[in-house]
Amino acid sequence: MIVSASYRTDIPAFYGHWFRQRLAEGFADVVNPYGGQVHRVALTRDAVDAFLFWTRNATPFLPALEEVSGAGFPFCIHLTITGYPRALETSVTDADDAVTLAHALAHRYGPRAVVWRYDPVLISDLTPPEWHRRTFARLAGELRGATDEVVTSFAQIYRKTRRNLGDAARRHGFAWRDPETDEKRAILTDLAGLASEAGMAFTLCTQPDLLVPGAEAARCIDLDRLYDIAGRPIAGRTKGNRPGCFCAESRDIGAYDTCPHGCVYCYAVSSRRTAKAAFKAHDPAATVLRP
Image (cartoon, rainbow, N blue to C red; front, side, top):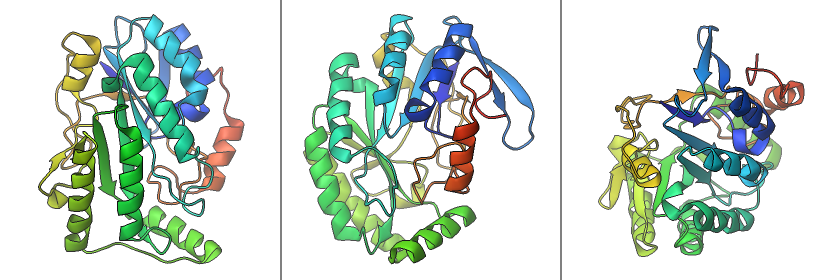
């Protein structure tokens, strides 16, 4: 079993103590976000083939990574670095610090253990197409050698995303838009070329209609990568979460509406106020991240 921690929230940045307690006790309880049922996920060495960690800031999680590595668990870290303005990302770690961390992680655990996520691409007055080309080129150059893959996608505009973006736009005085397909493909073509120049594979997450020359469909939970990290085959099957997803099957131990980073485009948070309240009420000793 592959355990995902977590595409629903940033466990490494905010819930490392909880994760370490769960690892020590050998299980985590997870509330189904759609039905409310509680399921137990074993976190023992016999049960877990590998961990996938998703984060904007792995620094608070470094002691946990040492424990995970010391216990013999293979793992991969998806590290999101976009360098967006604070109006879009209220409290994420500084991009330069994140780049430094990426190199440190690659040095400690190997470059196959780190995947860069420039995700999502959001077009706004603050981040027009040329801003993305310039910022992506800079970050790709700085991350050369720390990773061999960058994953991206355009922002998915769900109802809550539209509401949160609208609120932020009114508050900070900017406009945003969801470009037409041709414009998205043109931007991605340029980014793919920049990734290639930096020695990185350029992969696109669950947007098959936007695949351009130089881009491949992403497998964020990638059995081949985990094989290279572990030095042995990792059991699993492809079971994506939505059309165009080629991830291997996993069990996620996170919870929605618990990440207080304040990224206004986030699909996993209905409101930052709700997420901050959940974080404040969190009990690191509980078996479940959020009741």
